[in-house]
Image (cartoon, rainbow, N blue to C red; front, side, top):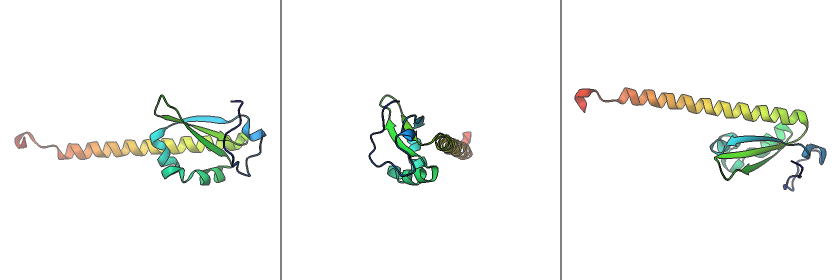
Amino acid sequence: MGTLPERKDIPPWVKAPEDLKDPEVLQVQTQLLEALFGPAGSRIPYFEQVSKVMLELKVLESSDLTEVVVYGSYLHKLRARWMLQSMAEWHRQRQERGMLKLEDAMKALELGPWMK
């Protein structure tokens, strides 16, 4: 990715142009974005500040994925990638546990053959 980001408000902790040259690109399921970044991306500024990175989100038209482009120093990009992957995995496991609980509840509610 040789082009600089379109965003005009580069955070002060991101050093232009060296931190903008080689971004880390992750693909995240679009449905996870609200869980990761809050409604309408309200937690993105907090995530950027804590991670000392700048994020850009690019929705991929042909799939249910969104590219999360991470700009910053090498170590900050690695830490941000690890945090995003960990959060996504936590939400995936949480959703899976919820589905298992739902299946158990549905099995418990199944009617016996005499009630059909």
